[in-house]
Image (cartoon, rainbow, N blue to C red; front, side):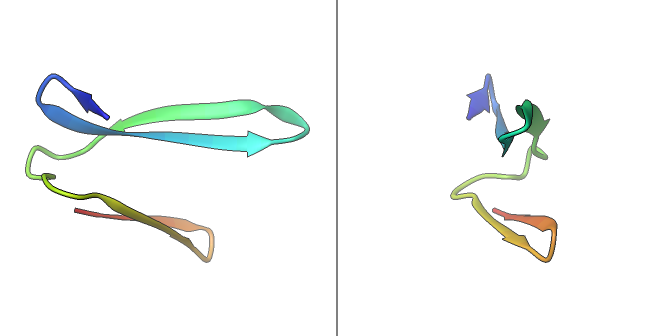
Length: 48
């Protein structure tokens, strides 16, 4: 997702017992190109 000129990641966490949790995280200005995301051992890793 892009807001004006900065890339933004929208993170949605779904839990069947609770409402979805959504957060928007703006990325640094130097974050250009393809974004990859990996969730490993409870941590979210973003690369660009």
